[in-house]
Length: 532
Image (cartoon, rainbow, N blue to C red; front, side, top):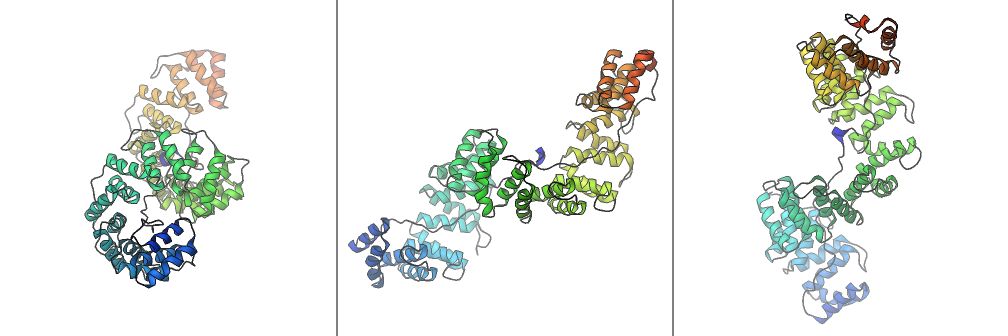
């Protein structure tokens, strides 16, 4: 995609509360321990034989373990209702691990009705016994809008207690809070400290977010290679955002070798799971034929999936495909529909293209007012094409009151980005004194910038300035060189002037001010985005 909208792959700061899968042995009864040893070697039948009688007799540890077996479907058919029943029996006896897991069931509404107050109650009881997992979960819950008494400061305290005990999820949550400034002063260094602790424990979301900080140099040294290593570690665990981010690195080829095939392999599994960024990235790979020949049908399939999830890049790209007839018949109305969806999300390239379609009357009735409505926000996002077009609208008084000063300002903003049409138009305005004071030196400066980029109109006008010594020292050789470059591009005026120089001599141009040529409204659509 164009540089001003490049790279927006999700960082996955969603905080997860998960049910523990392994627990420390609680109690010293031989049958309870024997059941645990059997459970560890995955002999679930033997574990059940040991724990069932103890649980029936009211042993809180055995009741918890039976709840865990039903919760995760180990040796029994998974049944969250039975899990909740056993957890509750154990939790009511004060067993902290059972209280934590019962709270999770209430939080998620599994086996019991979803009830945040009950979840908070049981997390609190477990946390008060020093259970770091429950403290972390309670801290995470305190951050959420659905919590009855949301309290970010309380969340920070709980998370710090849990994080210091080594809870990776709490460390990750705390790092996210410092990174985003949620409940604490924003502090990237503090964020990196906590994320690093979680990442060292192999926690994939922390590895991914720490990688983002290394890639951007936020709170840590700028170290893209380290970022790639962390992305890979998280991606190997199946972490979706990390797979996306590593795939993007493979597509860019700046830190790791460019490898579209690897990017495709990284994206496909998560795209099939419905990840919108992966679907969009995969669509762009197929569209551009970056692994094999272009496959517009496959590209459209993936892009439609992403677009239907409101992905602006995919919507914009489908707009380009319909506008340019890539794999489908040209359909300007459909292009307008897709550009509108992306444009309403603030996607500058689509706003620009939609503005141009209203300007030209493609797929819609020509409407300069509507063109300006879409072009202005794209121009304010620093999209050079839109800035140039806004300048043209003010220059001609199309959809706005004619205003050369405003036109010159928009042309200047685009010209400063190297946009040749704007550089040329600004140069001509300095020659004519339109919206700016007449200044031949400024005119020559802007025309030369455009001419050096190969724009024939600028080359021709710059040649005229050299021939006349206007804004630059008179230099017929330099004039001939620029006329030649423009003539080789088929510019008829440059061909004619060059012929006259050879036929009549250079002095024939010294007083001819009427030979300048103007460029028209040479607008074009912004093309397909490079990356999601």
